[in-house]
Length: 82
Image (cartoon, rainbow, N blue to C red):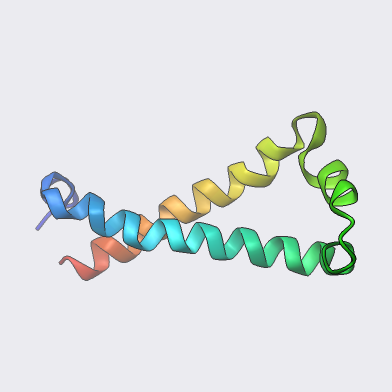
């Protein structure tokens, strides 16, 4: 089956979300823990906010993870539905 035929199947998008959404959440949490473990464990969320999310920094933080999770979800879902 071609990619277009697989994407047209109704269960493709539900399977995509089952893969991409948990992957996005795991990548986001692990990224925050790896980069800011000491701040998170001490409860200093203001520093994490200033470093990653203030002044539009959230776009770069989440943007890469959303794109990466979408490509990963598409790849895995397409691979499993062949």
